[in-house]
Image (cartoon, rainbow, N blue to C red; front, side):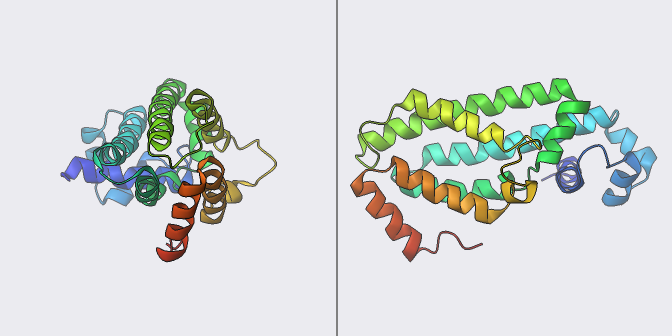
Length: 208
């Protein structure tokens, strides 16, 4: 990681923790340990900072997916391995962050939504298809329906106006763990469910 990439990583962490609007260029300079003048020598303006922050998140997700696609593990083993890595990024993306992005940087937000929709659609479709081929997922699953469902559920948690669960619930590991168990047991065949629950118990899947 070069110096600029390190800057962007630190800035992204700030945005994810406090939201985009509340983080000023002065806050960024302080976090990076450089002067505000130097910040503007690296970034054109805050819009540029936000754009590069989103690009950083997208790259992290792309790397996880690429590793997932290259893996020789079965779909359940791959899903568990991918989840452990993806959660380090996903749980940090708070609804407040997405709300600020949508309100103050709509073009960047729209691009990110298109990106997320594409990767969720592609990975879910291939995931379901591969799982059925390995007889680890139910044969009656419709890949297209599961793809649409995954996209809908993913974006639902990014809306702070959802009242069924609090923001704390939606971004908690407990919520994610419970949904993961529910989801995997729902799509697995008897064979797949047995394997999943063995891994759940033996590998202490839900521990940090």
